[in-house]
Image (cartoon, rainbow, N blue to C red; front, side, top):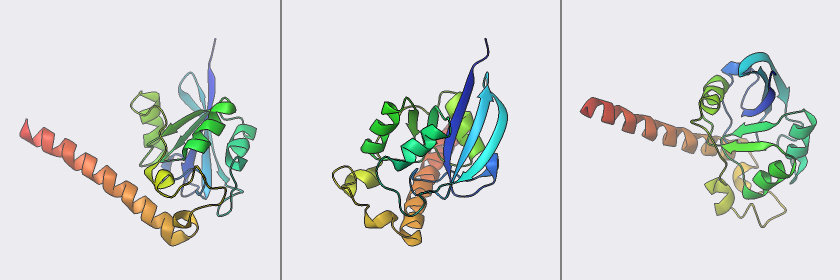
Length: 167
């Protein structure tokens, strides 16, 4: 029996597998939907986020569920969103970075698993507030968040490179 999976990935652009993963699932301009059959890519479709710039709690998980996804990969999301995805029967996975292709390969290979609330959500009271925090209200805040995530990726890569050089 073949297993069909639809994976949604938060993205900063609409270039499909070559899109850059967005650091925050709700404030990304696009979602890339990848249909897999027995772990093989069958179809890739980039869709504009209808709530980009103005989402309310629960809207994005419901949208992703309505698109038929059963997995959501993102750079980060808050605890509330993680719970909403779980209620929808969608596996939420945080920590995705790089290209959509890279994040998908990491997920399928088992290196990208689980979901933890992003530090920005915790620091800005995302869980307790019904309103949105200022850090993600504008393009500058979103870019700052993305730079922080990229810096973390760079630090991790440099650490791996140092370990390889030492051996």
